[in-house]
Image (cartoon, rainbow over all chains, first blue to last red):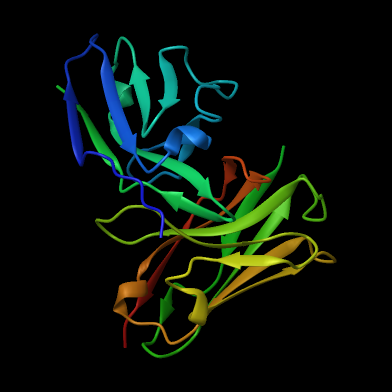
Length: 106
Length: 119
């Protein structure tokens, strides 16, 4: 079965750039998307189709996808960005989530 | 705008069947543009996709859960449902319903409902 691999944790200082990776076989041939989930809340879509931002998502969130790796980049990271982040892709007709990355802003 | 709301028992006994319903408001489950999914997050773990259904009744399930899962849709009530049989403690999780544009991202999620499997 298809798998997406994320680092369990990433740390970043306020105002700096955070990068979260998601790896999978030929992931660049698929669309990747990203969700942010804060404690006690439902996931929120922050990037879809590799690099598109839904309305209401700040411009500091961006995405890329090439080869085996998709990357979520948060520029000028703020304390409010501390959350769990999940990548997701479709493999044939099934949905696959990455294991999630806890972003700590310290 | 479209909203999703999960409902169902918060406590299920081991070996029994977990049943949840997702009520859709502000839009129609009969739209051909969307798939309607169930996704869960066990405590301390990540998101796990369970399966989805189209308004036609066509389904697709996570292979790891397929033998225990049934997702159905009721267009007259504008809702879809999940049944997960023979549950164990490992099925304890927050269960979410969500909508995706066909083969695209999940742009609308329910608030989630906690289901505990315990005697």
